[in-house]
Length: 108
Image (tube, rainbow, N blue to C red):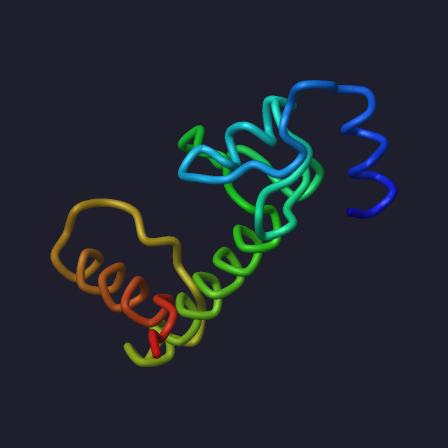
């Protein structure tokens, strides 16, 4: 146990320093535990636009991937400039679908 974890444990007797289970991130975010099993502390977590508690780094990486996919989808369609995909026309839906497909992480 590192010094920060020991200090937290001393200040919060009776509480777990390491949160486990499906609500681990929730516990850490609401100061019910110090860190998750993966080592994420409160400063590493944030709420996304849907209100879910997510890893700050993972969220930033996903945004970056999605932006890159946007460029690739535009180039695949033969566009030089990027236009925001707004509306409900079939071409825009196809463009958005292609962008989402390219942004998904490859699973091994």
